[in-house]
Length: 508
Ligand code: NAI
Ligand code: MG
Image 1 (cartoon, rainbow, N blue to C red):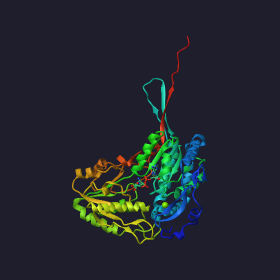
Image 2 (tube, rainbow, N blue to C red):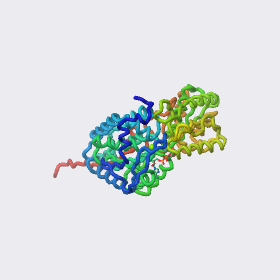
Image 3 (cartoon, protein in one colour):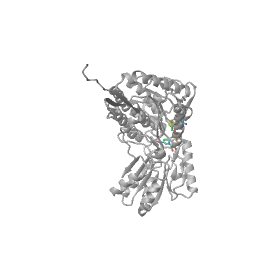
Image 4 (tube, helix red, strand yellow):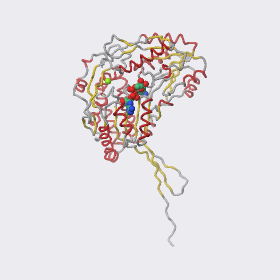
């Protein structure tokens, strides 16, 4: 497997997919043109050039997809496909994804920009690991029997699917986010409408043909492309969608809740942003902690919901740790995703680059000190590249410390004592993840218990596993993906009462 290649060396299947003309909407296992007749371009962030024309779904297309998903839910999907049958289809899909992994990884790198090595060796294997884990749940979704206080009543519960699920996902892990939603939604017996991010629709569209090939009945999986407005908003406001699963920004998450409340009270689960604290105590394995802190924020160019973007260092080792971090970061290669040497790929869009630059400029004006980086990179062509940037700061109220930048920017600060640390670590509106580096077991656990975050890593950072529940505290959202919690997210409980009274008295 070559990781250094030019775009001229793309697989024939990737090239054929890109060259096959405008991409349509996937409804009822077939490709249909958007009713608006409108298309938009998905760009390659490493070059700024368009990769393909993509259909823009409007309200009428959303209606058509919902009708297809509803019909499939009422029809053979929920009635003819038993748990084991659904699992078999999901396993088949995982096998097909494995067989097409090179092409999917190439599309991911073209569309999102991330290093090909990361797409191929990170995202793709994890996609199928996740799908297989979820498929394994299909025949383990159990109810319970309930010991009520009434006599002669047998009470049991069933976990039933919700119905039609819509998933709106972001651009940072395009295929992985699609599977995080598709896996549990279908495992539990729902049907799905997936809206990939407008910046990165290609891998989901390629997946569509694999869904049909795997043998899912028409309407079980539908894929609509388009931006937040009108496509995402039409899904959020639809009267016949039972659940909306969202990953993205906190601002849009709030809009989705509002739309759900104003329409049909559809269930909502939100995995939103973060501003995760990563703490290095003086008693830590310092080289490992510094390396860990480096990758926690700069892999994926900081475009990761769990990015460890606030680094707290105990004062006794602050200078030593900051120097070591600076040394490592300055050796990181920023490049396009197919380059031989690349640690950090491009930023997703020009708008996002400008946003990052804004935080950096404002941060400097407000008195934070740039230790490393701080500028856009101009000599890599027309793509959107930004230097890995380290800020040193004291003032927790700075926007660059409070807000999710979603770029390669780390904010580093010194702390003196425990209470100060806990207060400052918890001082943002977010609570997605946290890291702590220490050789003191008690300290590590106590920190993990006091920090407000859905996931905490002690002496590590960033591991996410299909078996381990994942989701946010505070404004990082609610609902847990992964693990058995993911099944709860895509089912509802029905309680059934059975009168078992039997008249056993002898007739007179
Ligand atoms: P976004 O939240 O706007 O987009 C995520 C998804 O929501 C996309 O599919 C988009 O089309 C859709 N969407 C946008 N507006 C919508 C609306 N009104 N109704 C329904 N769907 C809508 O995120 P964006 O603009 O890509 O990035 C902005 C910031 O959001 C980032 O800088 C980062 O801070 C945060 N973000 C967090 C992510 C995470 O993994 N938690 C992922 C992506 C972004
Ligand atoms: Mg793109």
